Image 1 (cartoon, rainbow, N blue to C red):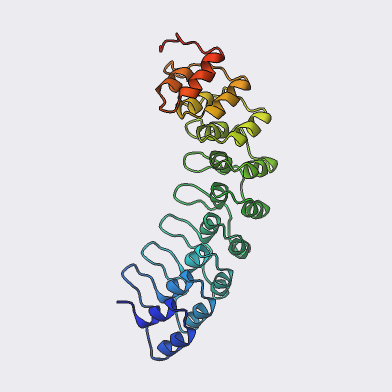
Image 2 (cartoon, rainbow, N blue to C red):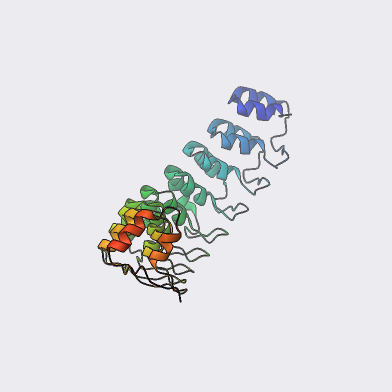
Length: 297
């Protein structure tokens, strides 16, 4: 059963909230997931009710079972007013949830730029990483947010920060096909030849996801088209494996080695032949000199 105070918050009724508080309703009541009325008000982004609850003794930094604070919730709803009220009452901008994510991580994920602008001046460090090793910049790149990335970089975000798999923000932007984000990151000094723990470059990432505009842009920058990953696979291998014929044709036109073998002796043709979507890739390879008699080592 929903407590009357929480129901009033759901209804967005500040007068009813006042009346219930006056009747000594518990402003720090916790449900079975340890969420308080303040969590509910933050979830709805209701700044007026948030203020009422805090002034009546609600714990501003209460954590639920996922260690989420009301500030996490308010940022997730992209409510700038709610965030401002919580910050005014000393909400912890460095609070971490069970994934070690701060409100800034949430802002970057949810495209809450205005909320991030309120958080950043109060942060001890914009480069804090979560359990996966990702910073807010990683999430901004993953979400394709140019404005958020501009904000983070202007406040000292490390453009080449890497997560636990050694992936940089540019890896994620390339994989998602956010060409404007990739260009912005490059303009600010991102390493276009960086490799993750399995030696995938941004070109590998873009090729694997059929992001042709990013592939073209990276090639225009002069990255090594035949760079191999930890398994000896080039971007052409990966594009063939995934049946990305548009990317395959672009790589071939740009001079990719159609007969380069990976560490197990497989060529791109082998990968195209085993792909369920590789028919058009096969045609492009064969027409451009792929060795149809190549044997695996």
